[in-house]
Image (cartoon, rainbow, N blue to C red; front, side, top):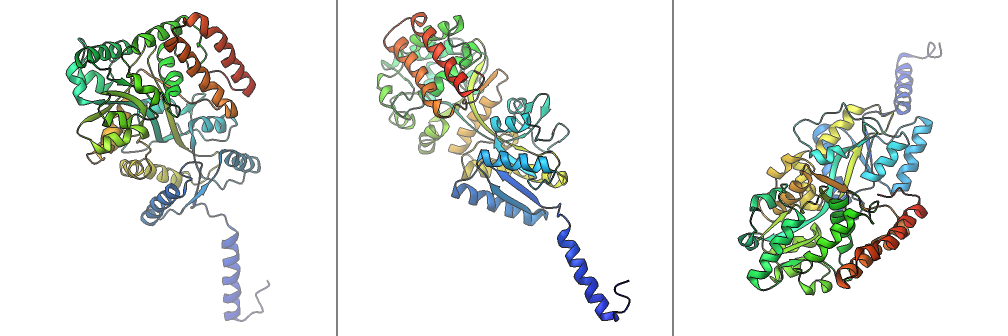
Length: 425
């Protein structure tokens, strides 16, 4: 034995040094390295770091946040998977990217993971699976919705109630919106419906992500179809009651505040100011439904566990913290992403954020949801959205027939998806 000739004190010192060296060589499985493409801006990153630091202090679980761009995170996960040297224990990314990770076999199946004390919105749960495996836990969401001046409820058409609109029942349809907008215009002598059709407005998102899926079930796959022709005819009727100044509006908060319209659709971030300034005057509600369901765009981020992670129990504790009602509310207040759990709505203080969040939660809870995600078309994204704007201008403003406009544009859309190599949605 090497140490038999050493004196007692020397032996103990040598033993202690050897012990320290061995400890440094042993992997520390207790730490959770959190790789995230979300909350990368400085202010958002600082907020999340503070939240995680507080969690680490109270739980004893050391969490390290590492921000990535999507390609870099993919490369890291692929390399660790190939070498079986897993250092990223928890991943946060957008839904579509998480599907890509799952397709490459990089993510663990979370079907047996239960997060106590929270109820995830059923629609979000449905979209957290890939090939019959649960590949992520919902974490964040953002979307577009409708804001309504409460005075508009005084002019509801027959068969439609305030509760129908606020809760997004099957009676809250695009046909009902047409009837409501018509009644508002007749009784107030002014069009009371507004959309952001200005140069920087997000009107194209309504076309491809909202009304198209609601009538056809798809954003682009049935662009030129009988169902699409019906949709365009209804849109032509609807625009008889839309405020003519909408072509100058890039966001709908100011038209609402100026009382130019009582009903408006836009991104929640572009409705927020109206709700903040006059929270007692407005309510945020789900969008109407069409013959196929209630189509809307959902930007969702989820939390996933890479395959091969050893300290799953610690990782799940971090997920429990990030999806707790308290953390979800803190994220809404500080970052602007909306909760994904029902219990969070009860924890949001009264005021503008609660109004916005309740509308988003009601929309996400709708059983007839048709989720649309913005296609990842890279540099072709502008051509994609311009195709919808072009169709709208020709059919609604210039009164061309859908049959003369849609076939050629449908070929263009198909070509865009084929060129990029993305399945048409």
